[in-house]
Length: 110
Image 1: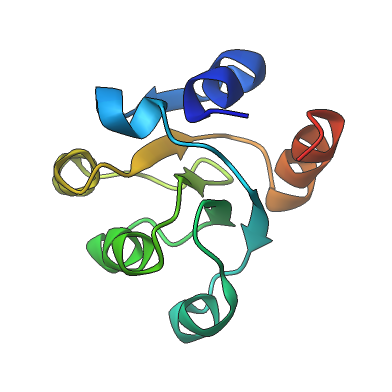
Image 2: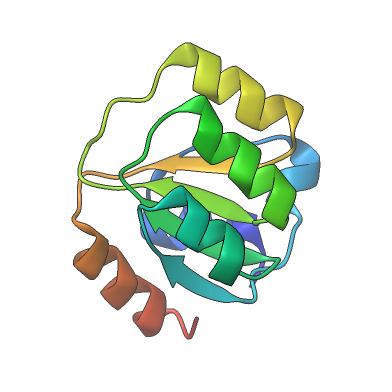
């Protein structure tokens, strides 16, 4: 599934470059500890977290994550949006808790 299809089917608010929208999604990873994500998340996955800061975008770029989903309505600053766009990382905002986002991902076959 491509990022643009994921965004359409979930209805999550998304900020993404055209390049980011065309990326494939290869799985889902959930975690809030950045060092754990760096050691365990794989390229092209969706990363679900409440960590809404620039370091999350940096880790996403390092791990080549397809979609960074900020859960539970955690606030997202414009600086984070700008950096995600610059790095071609799709950034999504969602009011749901991580568990509910995971359920949606399973329903979508991810």
